[in-house]
Length: 296
Image 1 (cartoon, helix red, strand yellow):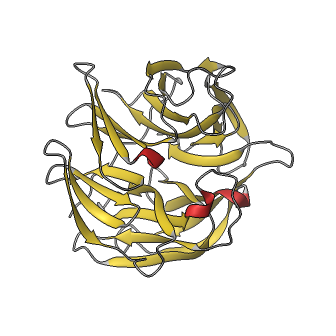
Image 2 (cartoon, rainbow, N blue to C red):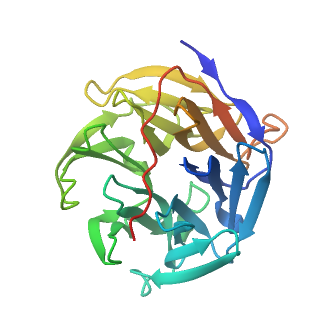
């Protein structure tokens, strides 16, 4: 089945990223990474609001106590979107100022996972070694390093039974799978869930998981989102997006049957892709997993 995404909000983001569904407020949050902005769409009223946080935006997630948790350029922060304020929690890479945070997501116990990368890779095509790491911020605000030696930390997600953690380090062209212990947050037994075929021609970016355990991967340079089976490693479905650089996706809506997709104008012929940088929506025919909130 071929499905195409339709434009929802046209803000022309340089790098639109990190869409998040807040089921309590029926709000989609997403980011314009290099323009230091968090955007919010109230899906009930259609109102769009924006907040400048003064530094590159990596990822956000809802917080159980209200507001957002964020991984920004300089570490973990609380974000009060309504008040327009941020408060730093801690920066695990304060000694690596040339790095910044990128994708992040909360697990079923409310821990916030987010990874770092060199700012040399801000264009998606720069040259840098494995300078980043994947971190986990727990409800007591403790930070632990989960994976070291990461080049471009991107999509992550968990299986429906929460026993498997999926993770993308983009230049590997692979989705890695780990055994996951929900009680402790420990990961182990790394293996490949998806290896992109040689000559695929696009880079794996953000990712989410549907209720059947399939992986929805956004492709930078690929003009779409693919649904992949992590057991067989095969592509099952392709969702076309009218933008070249597709960065991430999340399931939302009342029934979690809507896929919200972010895109970028960076590195794009805007005459060929005039809607690049927009936020898109599609109904792919399956439902997704809920977005978990930060417990701290």
